[in-house]
Image (cartoon, rainbow, N blue to C red; front, side, top):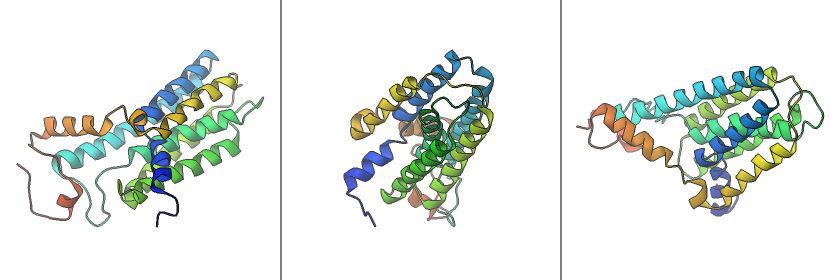
Length: 213
C-alpha cells in the first residue's frame, strides 16, 4: 500500500502542515498586496479563512462532542488536505505565470495534483479517513479555483514566488514542519468548550452509546 518509503510519505504529508502552509500563504499574500492586487486577493483570503473556520468547526465538534459519522468514518475535515489545496495551486500558478496577467492554469492544475498527493498521504499514514481528506481537498480546491478566476491583473515579480517556495524545504524536517501544534490547540479549545476531561477519538466513533464525562 505504501509504494513509497514511509519517510517519503512523511515528507509529502508535511507539505500540508499548518506550520508551512500558513507562513507560505502569508508571504504570497504580502507579495500580491505589495503589487496592488488587494481586490483580487480579498477573494482568496476570505474564502481561505472561511475554509479554515469550517475545518476547525468540524474538528472541534468531534473532539469535544463526538459529532461525526461512523458510516463515513468521519471525525473532522483534514486540515492538511484543505491548506495544501488552497495554497500550493496558487503558488505554482504564480511561479509558472511569467509575464502573464493571471495565474498560469498549468501551475494551478499541477498544484491541485500535488495537494491530492498530500491528501492521500494522510490516508496512507493513518491520520485521516478517505472521507476526511476528500472533503478537505475539495474545500481547498474550491478556494484555489475561486482565486484563479479572480486574479486577472499583472502579478508581482516571480522571485517572490521562489522565495516563498523555499518554505517547502521545511517538510524534510518533521520538527520544523510541525512547530505549530495546531492539533493540540484544537484539542484544548474543544475540551474548554465542551467541559469534557478527555477528547473523543476515532475509536469512540465506532462505539456508540459510550459518552465522555
